[in-house]
Image (tube, rainbow, N blue to C red):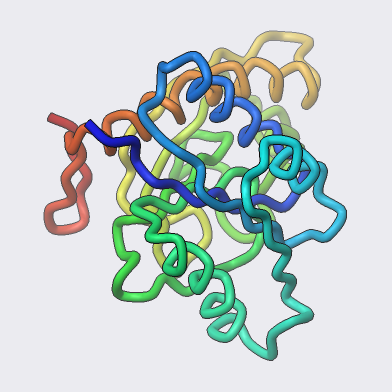
Length: 205
């Protein structure tokens, strides 16, 4: 089986990108990262991509007059390198998914969608909201991306307990540990052709 051709979208530190690269290096993930696109010129992930000799691009919202134009600029990159799957790895900007990439863009969110998600709910804000609500369980969700924040067919979820005395950072670390296992697993399922979407519902065979 040929490696799945992947473009990774980032905005920040590149920790998820690093995790995926480690799984690829260890032959646990049959994928090849053929491009990285950052919405932030100061993203550490751009340096990581350069160190791995992965073609890297920076496209910011300042480069476009609308969400549609920004999305067109973003998706021009994966098209050019014949990407099979676009992986959002801490990408914080809204996208319009073009027809040729429907169910070909995935994201991971640090909560159990549909809880604690949506516009403005990212990073530490999610874990703060979980603790403020007194929730006893959190986790992460991998889903296909559509035109709305943290929306689209859910592929898989993993739970992480919330403990008394947790802080946003301690909860974030526990959830991220689950993310580091779940995201490569889902991408591997996609590479193996095991994920299907029927009438808006994703299933894994």
